[in-house]
Length: 155
Image 1 (cartoon, one colour):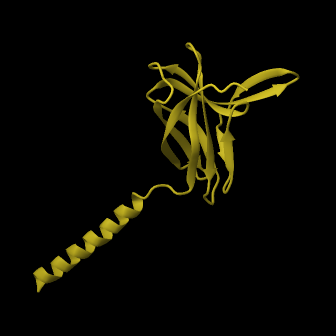
Image 2 (cartoon, rainbow, N blue to C red; image 1 turned 120 degrees about the horizontal axis):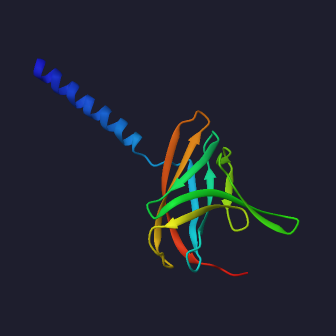
Image 3 (cartoon, rainbow, N blue to C red; image 1 turned 90 degrees about the horizontal axis):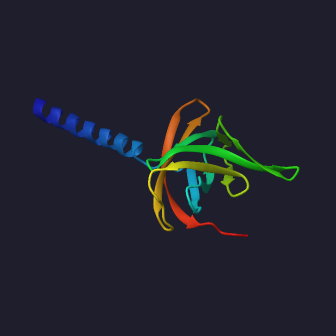
């Protein structure tokens, strides 16, 4: 009887543990990244990363940084024009993606400034970038995103 009870408890424990493991391994369905791309510029110039980020969750998120083995440094920048002058400003505090909202990282606005390429890139290459976020409770989370290298598209 004791062996049977132990076997039942062990089986129950494995089933419950497996359920918890499967729930914890589910992909994040509240954060969506669309059209991740890097525009390839000639020469040794810094590159720019663009994408659309959608927060389908119930709480605000803040994109605080990005990283990649392919670049020595990545910064979040915003481009703007004032009095005929173009200007780029680092977003050192990150960018808030409000609950239920989306933000476009696009030419002429927000973008990732990709510096110190570790090796040359070619059109069509896939580059993994890690986007690092925090929620309103300061809980950190990251998402790995494949960015595709595309040519600069002239107006």
